[in-house]
Amino acid sequence: AAKRSGVNNYSFYSSNLYDKIQKRIKIENELEEAIKTKELEVYYQPQVSLKSGIPIGAEALIRWNHPELGTVSPGMFMKVAEESGLIQDIDIFVLKEVTSEIKSFMEKNIKIPISINISDTFFKNKNFLKIIKNEIENSNIDPNLLELELTETIMVENVEMVIKKLDTLKSFGIRLSIDDFGTGYSSLSYLRKFPIDKLKIDMSFIKDLETDKNSQEITSTIIAMAKNMRLKVLAEGVETDFQLNFLKEKSCDEIQGYYFSPPVRLNIFKSFIIK
Ligand code: C2E
Ligand code: MG
Ligand code: MG
Ligand code: MG
Image (cartoon, rainbow, N blue to C red; front, side):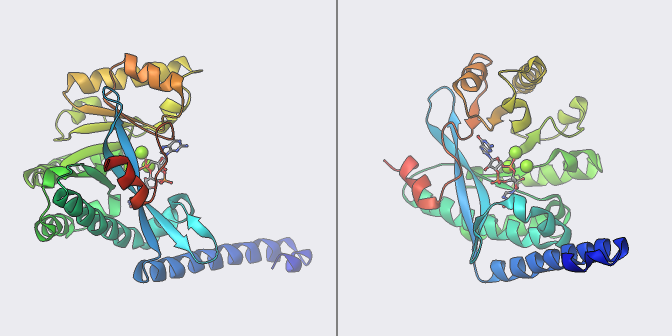
């Protein structure tokens, strides 16, 4: 299409936009197909206790085994997935996969909590609570082994309604955490009203810990605040000794990051857990 750009600017820009739309439609169609044909796969990233140094949980993260592109990370398709609503199908797929793994771990007497990411779209779906409840009941898992990661964005809209939903989720016996904490606008006074169990400090603060005093202060403050509210606190994106030691010194509970392991296939994750 770029070849036609010599004619005039108008055709250059319009054909470019045309290409973008085509590409988007292609991803959307392929993604819809991929969900049906099970080209999606759940990867697991260990969450490690800073006290014991051993994995005590995991986060489930979606990957797309694309026939031409190979393993595709969410960065490539999340925007399309969110805008098309397909993200809900992905969330439900991950929910089912994870409850089934929790169940098979339970059968081996391994009690390891696994967290899944809940998109804002799915959270707002009128059937959301019912779907979660049914899945817990049908899979027959210990609900305390399932954790839902929610975004800060959810927390700031319609606070009373959100608290009600979270209370209902807690009544199912599951765990709740706030993902990418520190990047949104949730006020600290609000936070106290939410029945959550854990804060996950956003990677962007951990990334610059060694060089940026500001990141150090924000990280320390979030950890102290979490302790004060009796919430667990996990640091995301830990890659270096410096970061690890800093977080240890501040008594952060858990870390997740390449320092220990990237997200891996289920069988590799199992080898971390089953000795
Ligand atoms: P997230 O939930 O904050 O997940 C953490 C992301 O950080 C993951 O990216 C993980 O691979 C990456 N990460 C972990 N440790 C490190 C590290 O040490 N260094 C660096 N540079 N990165 C690290 P991933 O898997 O590409 O996922 C990106 C985002 O896509 C997730 O961020 C989450 O918001 C979304 N996502 C992934 N799977 C799902 C899903 O099943 N449902 C929904 N709704 N969202 C998902
Ligand atoms: Mg997450
Ligand atoms: Mg995160
Ligand atoms: Mg995120």
